[in-house]
Length: 174
Image 1 (cartoon, rainbow, N blue to C red):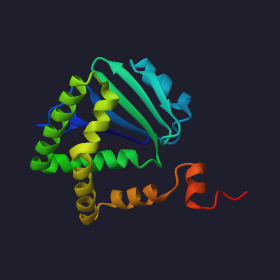
Image 2: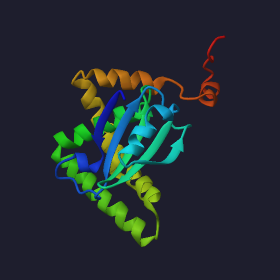
Image 3: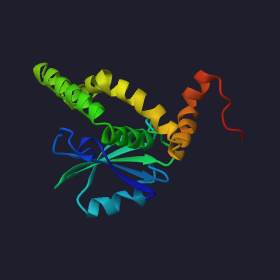
Image 4: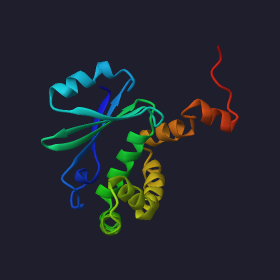
């Protein structure tokens, strides 16, 4: 384990949230499940989803308390984005309130349409989440947070071979 961070709505005081804790776990290599999954299973987590094409993402869940544990590799930009967004909402009550209103609207629309959580998440990110994220990252970087430099470097790196080919980036040399 390289890093463990409480992220998501329950990590922001005053923000409406479902009773589910979201945690980002950063590991050296998410594909090496034998290095971390057995220990997590021993404390009540179960591996429910693998997304190797999205930064090696793994999702583990626990029931008591309800928890989503998102596992990423050390080179993934996602945990960095999550921390920047969380910290921005913590420090900017107006943004937190706009985001809460957006979440309520997205939830109501998803419920009315009979949609599931993934559709809710997509609608929520299309609304104020993107505009708030756009405001949070430059502010974080203007505060000279070293994490932003790392995020910018990681975000510029192709995440897979097809992305390298689409960008015309030379692949690894043998």
